[in-house]
Length: 268
Image (tube, rainbow, N blue to C red):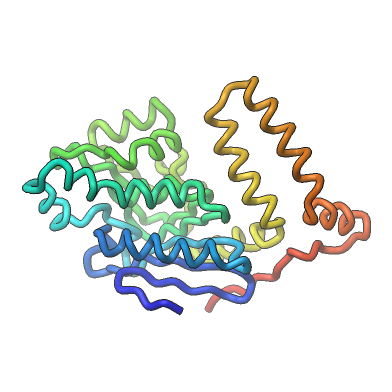
């Protein structure tokens, strides 16, 4: 397995890939090295047909503090073309995770700010510890939450994203759940059990159907009724031709678990 400097990646036999932001001394702040390594790690997961689900978490007490301040400060004296080039990696990572052809579960082990909130926003499922705090702090620093804004806005909606993005208002874990940023809030002692429950659900589902359904949701949320009518009927017709559809129906009538069903062994 490839060794990384700023992240950790491991796989288990059930098909779970765990991707951990691993700069705990700076609260897992994002920097160019991490962007490159995240891209390489996603390549490895996507290339592995046995990898069924991706768990994204942070090492130490924080999930992700956002962009590394020292790196961000260095952008000030760069020419505009260089700042544009340096702004692309985070935008590319967010877009990649948002459309990643696996279920992405956010294991939100602690606070997240700025870009860290963006990372949560592109997870399909997010479970957070009840002690976590969240904020979009850019405007307090004279900056703008530019590359994360499409994903945070899509997650929170027009009204709530203005409420928390325009004044850097901090959110408790409970409020983040109410606003839709995270789906479940648990104690630190129950975090891994909650993630295990999500993994059990994920590993009972057909991987090809999950990937297609993720593409389906991306499409229908961005197109009008007429386009969606054509697209969804076409996808349904396509999927009836797949081996998964045949196996799924056959296993149902034979009262057995389908071939893709995996048993997840809790860590610990």
